[in-house]
Length: 264
Image 1: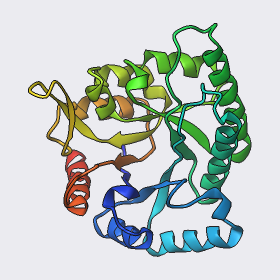
Image 2 (image 1 turned 180 degrees about the vertical axis):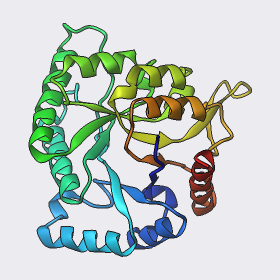
Image 3 (image 1 turned 45 degrees about the vertical axis):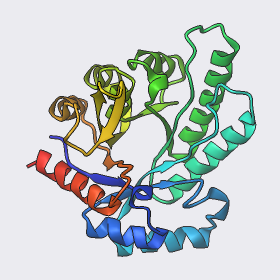
């Protein structure tokens, strides 16, 4: 049976770090997703800093569900590629030291042509990162985005790489916003999902585009998605990710409550 482990992307609260930790605990989160470039940085996480942060988390009865490590471009771009690779590895090591085994990032546009230089650059970089993951105990998960298409291209990339080089951070709203089926994409990617992002969206025909909405008010079929995860014995977190323009704390609390109601 699928167990509810409630995560929250800490930046959604729009509060200073320590205050956000307290708020996350108060509104019912079990874990938090932190930004590894703005909230905590690998170069700053000395052994003392790691112990201090783990103590703070324990005081609030929180864990870290994932470390978000966004880069300016994906791993198929040669622009500052070595820095991106080394930065990702450092974030993975930091995540493991903090008791977390998932680092998420958008890997970039996945080329259709396996003979293209971009494909070669991307697969070599991700294989290198994957080998580091096997050594350090944390893994890179590709954030689903418009670059993911219907999910099949990302699946092809994962299958091409050495086993356990790359996993999936699944955001159902990203497929709605790209006019794709979140349910169909889940069926393609489910066995590789290590982080599930609870974000909702709907197509707004008057605007001619997709828009993010409160959890439960969009077109996501949550029962189908969670059912597929259950079939695959998913054991990760379900993380609230809500970019609310106003009253972000209430919006996040509402999302956590909605998740709890889904599992009643």
